[in-house]
Amino acid sequence: MSTSLTTCEWKKVFYEKMEVAKPADSWELIIDPNLKPNELAPGWKQYLEQHASGRFHCSWCWHTWQSAHVVILFHMHLDRAQRTGSVRMRVFKQLCYECGTSRLDESSMLEENIESLVDNLITSLREQCYEEDGGQYRIHVASRPDSGQHRSEFCEACQEGIVHWKPSEKLLEEEATYAFAGASKPGALEGSGYNFFSLRWCLFWASLCLLLVYLQFSFRSSAFL
Image (cartoon, rainbow, N blue to C red; front, side, top):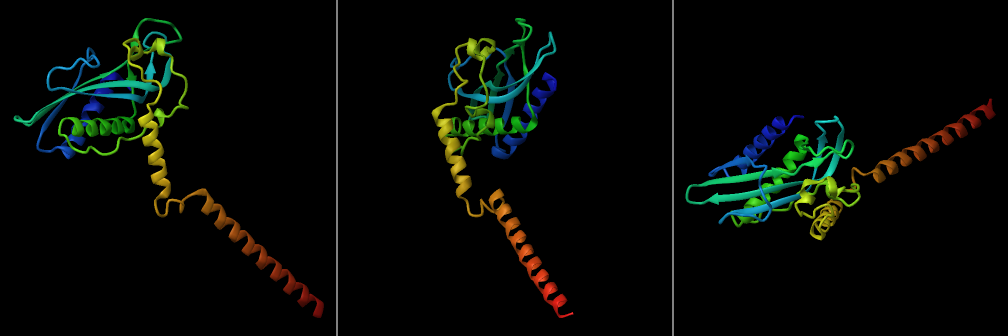
């Protein structure tokens, strides 16, 4: 996936979801590669996505790699009087560790990953710009601690002082709460492997009993002949 296509996909998903979340306001999404963390103009808010999943492609040696620690920085501003808002976005790059070139490469992302990341952005936007309850942030598989070792020397975000490769305690707590809530829902075990195997074994024993009855009946019938 090319960078331009990824950028267009980000804007497409963002505009569609904002039209649903805040149809009365007009929002724009701007890609800003010079955006700096914690350097905010008056009235602007910040949201930092620390555990996105993306694929990188080296433009020099054609090496590709997957990273579960892509950092995305958002700066957000809402003009309540004009009913307009702006989001500036920066996806931090990574260096290729195969050829050692100093060229920073951008990541590409699947549409479903972009959608979940935009959902998190809108949750933060509603909390910080509208002072609303944005709801629960979506948990990414990539944010779990067993997603692999992060090589900070090849990460642009790490080089700029953003410590992100270890999931925060809040993130792990939310993930545990989400897993517990899903397991405790009524009927949560209906589609599990346990019920499946229980049904299979019940059918097996029922078939075995029928077979034994049939053999016994056949044996008795042959004895009278």
